Length: 137
Image (cartoon, rainbow, N blue to C red):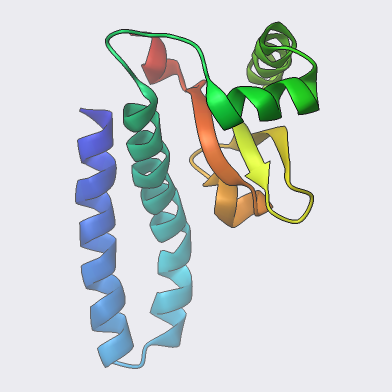
C-alpha cells in the first residue's frame, strides 16, 4: 500500500519534471526536487526492503558473513549495532547496513525520512530496517 503510493507519486513527479524541462521552467524543476527525492527514495528503500525478506529466514553466509565478522566481530554485534541505530532514529527513517567501496568495509548508517542510503552517504545498501510508523501496523 505505502510502496505503491511512492511509485504513483514518483511517476506523477517525473511527468511534472518532464513538462517543466520541456518548458525550461527552472523554478518549477527546483520546486519538484523534494517530492522527487522523497518518493524516489521511498521506492528505492522499499524495493531493497522487499528483496531482503525471505519466507525461510536464515543468517548470512559466505563472503557477507566473513565481512560481518571482520567489521563487527560477530553477527550478534551487528544485530546490536543495527538495533541501536534503528532505535536512535528520531522521527521516521531507516537504519541500514551498507558497503563502503572506498574502505571495503561494512558500516551501519541511518537516513531520515525516505532519503536513500547510497544517494545520501555513498554506501551501497545491503539491508535496511524501516522505522517509519507504517512499518508496525
